[in-house]
Length: 93
Ligand code: HEC
Image 1 (cartoon, helix red, strand yellow):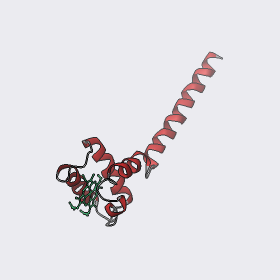
Image 2 (cartoon, rainbow, N blue to C red):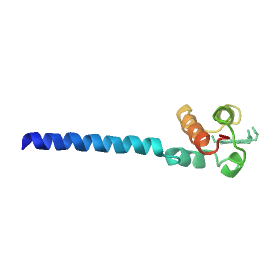
Image 3 (cartoon, rainbow, N blue to C red):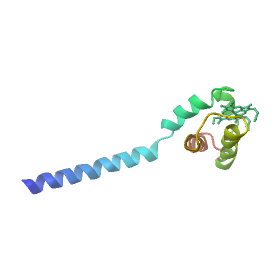
Image 4 (cartoon, rainbow, N blue to C red):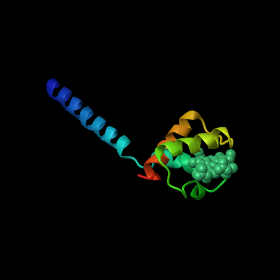
């Protein structure tokens, strides 16, 4: 009985970690969307920000320009999350 419940727990753990891994990879919005809508809707509307499609590299340059030149109040880790979100959802590919 002890062995059975150990196996059950191990199996449950494997299944759950698989679900979480899948969930993290399968998101198109998540935190990135929330951050983008919160941080990039301040000086101009967020619709202005996504009017043009850009490559991942262009998004990186744009977001870093907003941060460094225009003074957007985002941290480096915010920037990375927002760049990933934009590159996934508003990319030229
Ligand atoms: C502190 C104010 C401010 C914040 C916050 C801000 N922007 Fe901007 N943004 C500007 C200004 C000013 C311009 C117009 C001048 C320019 O292009 O640099 C602009 C223009 C843009 C443009 C059009 C020009 C281009 O390169 O295509 C995009 C796209 C853009 N912003 C994206 C973003 C994104 C994404 C964020 C969130 C990370 C953001 N902005 C946050 C000030 C801001």
